[in-house]
Image (cartoon, rainbow, N blue to C red; front, side, top):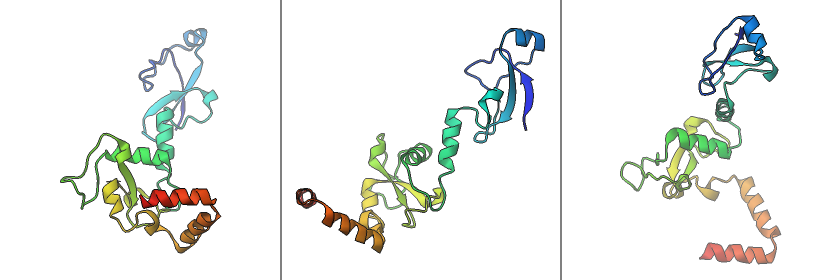
Length: 178
């Protein structure tokens, strides 16, 4: 629900503070008329200019977080922002119950962790189907790497391998052998 208000001197560090003043004083300062709305992400009230069109989010952080959260659904493509959001939300700790480290492996580097699809379906990106696990635990799962590929996916990989130039194939074969 929106309501029209007058704003004078909003503190940049607190966007939820709105001061209502006399309209003549307000317009003489050249600030203009503001509207209020409730953020779709954090549910906090905020003020915005009507020229900002929508007034759905209190800031870019809330807009980005709302966008990322809306992608955690079935039949969606997993993305880097989704990975960053999960790592930030759940922390840098292995969630595997069979982790090689007592209490779950912990690290300060996000590159030490991967996101595992518990049911093995890489299109099922619901948050309850995803878990943060360390690389070692991920290698031990049945759905790691090509073990998670469908028969069509394996055919596609073989076709890409055959269409690769000989020099690249030799490099890939030598790299895998070492």
